[in-house]
Each structure stands twice: as structure tokens, then as C-alpha cells.
Image (tube, rainbow, N blue to C red; front, side):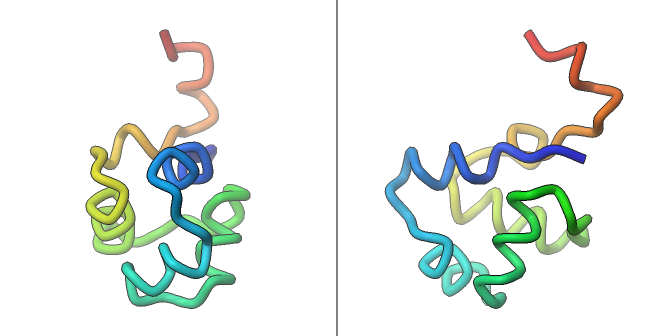
Length: 70
């Protein structure tokens, strides 16, 4: 799975630490999410999307969806 968390986080001027605090997780969790090394629960995905002001499907992409992006 790929994510656009880093791009959206930068757009709203949040550090990894600040996003982690907003969501209630450790910074390392945000690092792993951004690298696509951690598949979040639906709750965590929702919380991250809400903190960034976007929809869940704006943040997370399965590898087989890579060619479907417009």
C-alpha cells in the first residue's frame, strides 16, 4: 500500500510529531504509515484523514490502484 500522508501533512504544515499528537499515536507510527510499512486500522486511517482534512481514499492507495490514478 502507498500513502499520500507526507504530501498532505506538508500541505497543512504539520510535522510527523504534530500529526502523531493530533491522532494520538507515536511519531514512529506516522513514519511507518508514510513509508507504507504499516497498514492502519480503519479507525487510525479515519483519524489521520480527519486530522489532515481529507478523505481516507485521498491518503491510502493499494499498489494495484497505482495505474488507476488520474
